[in-house]
Image 1 (spheres, rainbow, N blue to C red):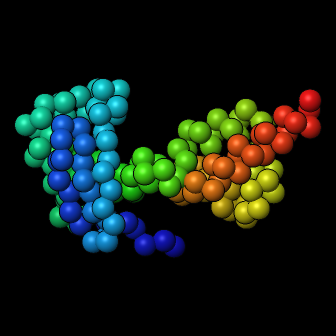
Image 2: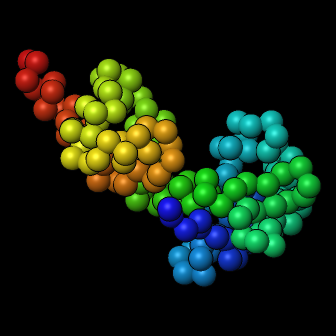
Length: 148
C-alpha cells in the first residue's frame, strides 16, 4: 500500500493560487480559480481575504480555510502534477477509454501495464503519468492511420 502524501506547508500566493509543499520535499503552484468558479461549495474562496487564511490541517491530510471548506492532499497532489505537465487528468483518460470502447484488459495490453494498474488509472485512484497520456495519443493516431 502506498504511503499517503502529506501537505507540510501551504500559502496563498495570489487569489485562487496556492503554493503547496508535499512531504517537505517538492513544492507546486496549484491554480484553483477554475474550481472556485465551477463548484458552488468553493465559491466563498473567491474572497481574497478568506482565500488567504488557508492552512494545512494538523495531520497534513488537507488544506483548510474554515470548518466548511477543505481540499484533500491526494487530490491536490494529483492536480499539482497535472498542472505541472507531469500527469494526465483522469477525465482525459476516461474519455479516451470510452471513446475507444476499451476494457481494462485492453487498456493493460495497449499501455503495457498490469490490469491492476489499468484499474487504478480507470478508477482515478493513481496518478496517470504523462507518458501514459502520450501513449494514448500515439495509439489513437496509429489506429486512425490503420483505418484510413
